[in-house]
Length: 128
Figure 1 (cartoon, rainbow, N blue to C red):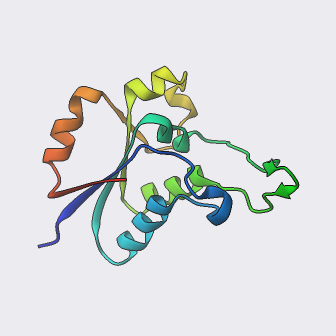
Figure 2 (figure 1 turned 180 degrees about the vertical axis):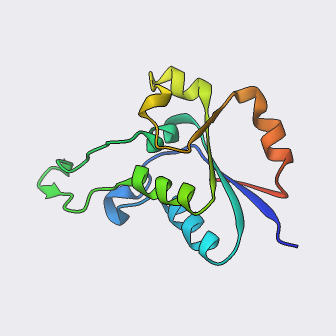
Figure 3 (figure 1 turned 60 degrees about the vertical axis):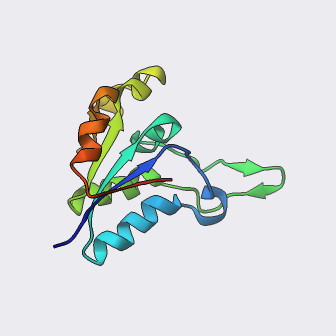
C-alpha cells in the first residue's frame, strides 16, 4: 500500500529567480505523476503562493531581469486539479491580510490547532 505523504512548505520563494518555480511544489508534481499519494501544507510566508492573480513580470535585481517569472499559484492550481489537497494555515493567511476569496479554487484553509490531526492522517511528514 502506498504511503500518504504530507509535504510542509514554510519558506517561500526559494530558488524562484533561478528556477521559476518552488522546488517542493515541482517535486510534488513529479511525485504525484509517479503515483504518490500527497498533500501539501503551506504555512508562514508560503501561504502567499496560493493567492490568485499574482504578477511578478516586472521582477528584476539590478540589471538582471526575470524574463520568466514564477507562477506558483498556477502550479498549485494544477496540483489541486491532479487531486492533491493543498492546505493553508488560516492564522498565517489572516496575519498577512489574505482573504479566502483571493485564493486559488480548492485551497483549504485550516486552523493551526488542526495541524496535529492533519499530520496524523499521513504516514510521512516532510518539512521543507
